[in-house]
Image (tube, rainbow, N blue to C red; front, side):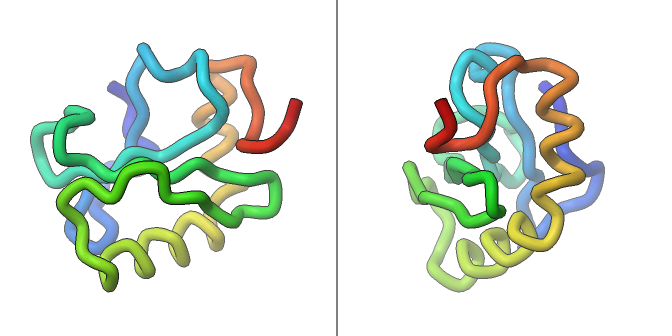
Amino acid sequence: MPKYYQFKVAGYYLYFTSFCVVECMHVHASDKALTEAGSAKFLVKANGDCELQNKGILNDREIRKIRAFIKDNYKEMYLKWAQYSENSFYGDK
C-alpha cells in the first residue's frame, strides 16, 4: 500500500491502494490501519483542488488541513501515483 509520504498530515497517513489505481488520482487518509474502512477519500483535480468522496472518521478541521496539504503538494504526489497508475486527475479524460 503506497504512502504518498511517511509522515502523517493532520494525524493521518495519505496513501492509495494497489486496487484503486484503476481510478483517477485520489488520496485516502487513515490513521493507522491503512484500509478504506473509516478512511477519507479525496479525488484530486489537475489544479490541486479536491472533491471529498468519503469523509470517513475525519472532522471538518482535519479535512481542511489535508485539502490544503494536497493543494500545496499535488504535483509531487502525482509523481508517486503515476508510478503505479496510467490514470490521471479527477475530471480528466
